[in-house]
Image (cartoon, rainbow, N blue to C red; front, side, top):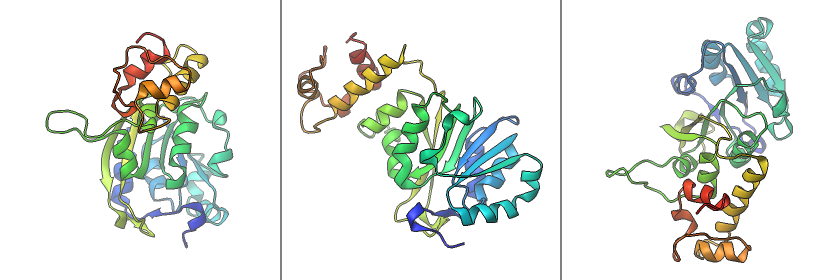
Amino acid sequence: MQAKKSLGQNFLMHARIAERIALAAQLAPDAVAFEIGPGTGMLTRELLKLAGKVLALEADGELCEKLRADFAPEIAEGRLELIHGDIRTFAISALPKGYALVANIPYYLTGEIFRMFLASGNQPSSMTLLVQKEVAERIAPRRGPSGARAEKESILSLSVKAYGVPKLEFTVPRGAFSPAPKVDSAVLTIRGISRKNFASRADEERFFAFLHAGFAHKRKFVRKNLADAGLSAGAIPEKARAEDLPLSAWLALANDTL
């Protein structure tokens, strides 16, 4: 099957890597795994070995037909439900509570998928995603020899950490895909997903208002950015930049406790 560039398709071709991704998801035998873009079904096969049921959403109509033929026994048994549709218009609320998101996602939809699922009223219990290595390292950077962070924070990294605990599991070379992307990839997990940092939706919205205002102009100090947006900078040091502040500082700012 020829990959479609318009759909951002890069098919995973290595069964061992697919197995490692499925294992990284730590699925219980009765878990429901939701897969975005099953493609040729390489990861789907591994998820079926571990989860009680797999729901797979595929935007490509031709691939859907091929997958229905390839997985006819699993579909007949009710262990696999194949859905033809676009994740951008899919109703996340229809998924069963406590589902686990496991997928090799189109790179151009990475940020949108993070936002859709983490901010959803029906959050997944965990997320295991194959993403660009650079994105994974931005969210969950490797630690230096002293244990210090190797990278600065970003809106993306802080947005993810506000809802769960991210971890870079392992990297995947570009040669594992067909066609091969121009960058290497990595498997990122997010566990412990919840809204425990927010007492209400209003608190959640306030946190993100502070976050986006603080990062509005990267060359400016965060106090200036917040002042420009009419927000209090609390006790933030005069020359601190947004990328230097940990999640705890942003939560304290939004809650007016810093």
